Image (tube, rainbow, N blue to C red):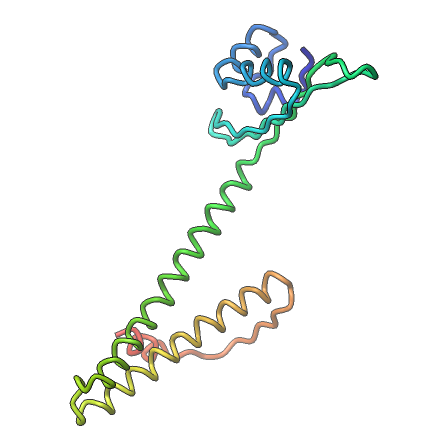
Length: 173
């Protein structure tokens, strides 16, 4: 069993002890997968959590010219950061979806109310004002998302302007 220092570190051991390394692999159920690769001559990829890390194990057999298995190689990659970023992406999409749903529900509800004749004639100007405010809110969110995309691509030019906080507070209320 040969193990690189990087792999030892990922497994949370810096020892040369064969037994300790085997114990860690058994704890993670890698030894079973290892044996399965040897007996079935197939490649396996699995994710395991260990020592506050998400590790990806890729296990493949090594064959000679006669197509006989002469060994197995295990590649261990720490994908913790990748998993965190993926979770952040999912959370972001969930939040953006929620933020879009709110003004859309208000717009749709007000329009349905007008079409169904539920809105009194004297309330229609206020309802239209609400529709415009919610449309403006959606427009700002789309603009923010486009700016975020440009920022990630390195194509966003930032300009600073004075801001009246009272307008924001009134808009929120």
